[in-house]
Image 1 (tube, rainbow, N blue to C red):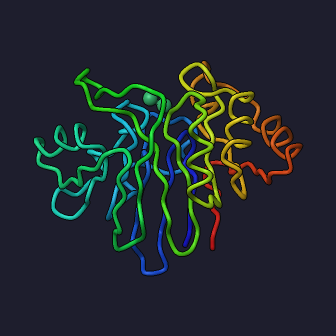
Image 2: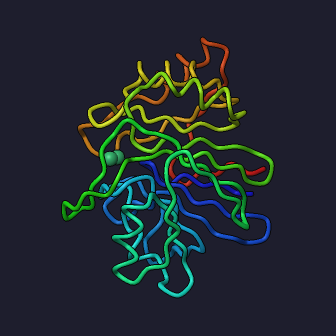
Amino acid sequence: MKLTFFGHAAFGLETADGVRILIDPFISKNRLSPVKVEDLEADYIIVTHGHDDHLGDTLQIADKEKTLIITVLELAHILAKKGYRTEAMQIGGAYNFEFGRLKFVMALHGSATPDGQYAGLASGVVLTIEGKTIYHPGDTGLFYDMKLIGEMNKIDYMFVPIGGYFTMDITDGVKAAELVQPRCAIPMHYDTFDLINADPKEYVEKVKKLGIDSMILKPGESITW
Ligand code: NI
Ligand code: MN
């Protein structure tokens, strides 16, 4: 398994079998992205919510014949009407895909498409793939039920929004790691707009003081397992 950070909340995964998965592929307007939209292909695209910086370039990247877009029901229906293949799930539900198990969990945030259509609830995802469990919380404010997500799932990698303004900031993101108790907390959703500039080193230091491992993934860097 290879997991690559593209900056913001965008990640790419490639399984040992060559299945390609993207999460929240915000690429063309992402000033930190190390890749171009035309270089990306995906078998699956997981979208946490409809905002432009998460739905991102999903429609440009998705092959209408081959790519399955996995998201919450209301957003899935909007995309299905445009002719895309979708898997319409909902918060609280999980499903075993060929690549692994995906569960939608709550996020404290809104969701609409870039043209303003209501797109259901914003979500986070817990993804168990090749023996490791990832928690991508999407955009979210801090909420205490993150503790429940950590109790019900042994999280290996938690991605934590730290940029503030639209999501948690460093202080709230440190508390989020304390609640979830992941094996490793990785900051995301910062420095892509001036409004959300934040220092990931400060975040990592503060999390490590709690006895939780934390690391910075620079855009373009990967974790393999
Ligand atoms: Ni958002
Ligand atoms: Mn966002």
